[in-house]
Structures are given as C-alpha cells and as structure tokens.
Length: 174
Image (cartoon, helix red, strand yellow):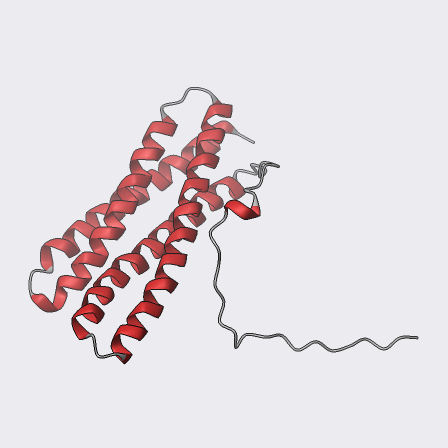
C-alpha cells in the first residue's frame, strides 16, 4: 500500500463531501414552500451525514502515522455501517407503523410517521453511501479488511419480506 496514494484518495473523498454539503445547502435554501419541505428535510439529513463524514475524515487525515490513519478510516467506516444498519431496521419498523396507522384511519399519525420516514430513508442512503465510499478507497488502496468482525449478536436484526424464498432443486445422487 502506498500511503501517499491512500491519503490522496481520502483527500479526494474529502473534496467530494465538501461539494455534496454545498449542494445540499443550496437545496435547503431553495425549498421554502410547503411542497418542498420534505425535500429540504431530506437534504438536511444528507448534509448532516456528509458533514459528519467531512469532520471525521479531516480528523483522521491530521494523523501523521499511516497505520493510525488506516485504523481511523476502518473505524469510521464501521461506525457508518452500524448507523446504516440500525437506521434500516428503524425504517422497516416505522413503515409497518405507518401502514397500521393508515389502515386504522389515524391520518395525523400517518403524516408524522411519513415525515420521520423521509429522514430515516435519507439517513440510510447517506450512511450507506459514506460506508461504500470509504470501502472503495480502502479497496483501491489495497488495504485488507481486519480479521475482527462485528459479532452477529451485536448487529441490528435485519427483516426480510417473507415472499422472497428460493427454489431449491435437488441434485441427483449417483
């Protein structure tokens, strides 16, 4: 691994995040009427996550040690992964609540849940993107994954629709 290349890729990601934050600020400023309120809320969440990525990258890049930098980036990526998975789980739970509220005619609660879902969906998208961007930098820099994996019992549960079942074709015995 060439530390200069790794750092330069991280600096490029830092620039990309700065541009994204500026773009989200423009969207927020242009979304003042009621119809665009949810778009502004979505952009605000994307901006928040990108600002956090920017702050974390800036702190990590201040490290003079290549090993420390690698460790920090792996840690940052893992934190984004955990937030992404937890937000995904919350999103599925809130979707279920929304459907139940709509079925029972609780439309005020449905509207509130819809707004919360916009924020959660934006968080899922932004943290997933940050996780993948950091992963791309690590992969392109040929940095191996650590052997330490997050224990399965610490990962948030993932819910899958029951309609997704695979067809199993038995193999012929000889």
